Length: 259
Image 1 (cartoon, rainbow, N blue to C red):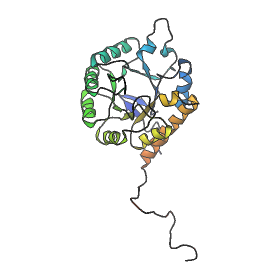
Image 2: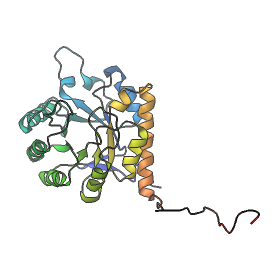
Image 3: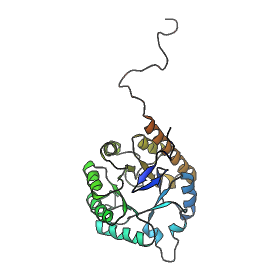
Image 4: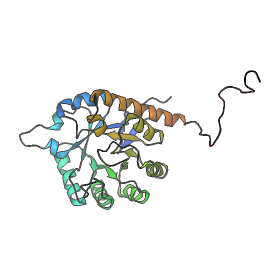
């Protein structure tokens, strides 16, 4: 079986052995290092407003050294606002990775795919490693790839809902048709759902709410990390066939006892 080092996740020329991305938004700053350590994650998302608070706590002081920062453009309603937030994140030392979030819908928090494409194109030209959050649509994914995205991040369900792989069939189309890492983002509520996403061939999974709202936050972070690794191993091993009908005995079956 391939080890994580033999099966790396590559994003924008950067190599990672973990395929779990931790969202820090709902996790207390004090507990962030514990969650990151238990999850094994090497990429952590953050909102710029948590890193740029005058006189307040700064999330950057709590994320362990050596972890890649993935600032997001949370709060952006247009491509222009997303580009502005990305540039600010780079200016304060968050690096060149950026997760594009452009959301105008305050009820369902669904991404604006058209504005996301525009922001991706601009930021890719400026040298950012762009990971756009999007509603799973094949044509949009193709446009994002052409715009210079380093990966595609389709939602599984509405942000923070913990409903799981509601868009499973559409994500599978992206996995099958897009030559970029597909990273499932938003809505994953259980380690088993994260494992299923990896078994489908997704490159990575991002989770936040499912961990932040768990009874044992550190334990749930660890469970997610293990489930994602297991799902990836299962995908690489090749899942067994599914019979359309009937059964297939594991041992030779020539008759029942007393027949």
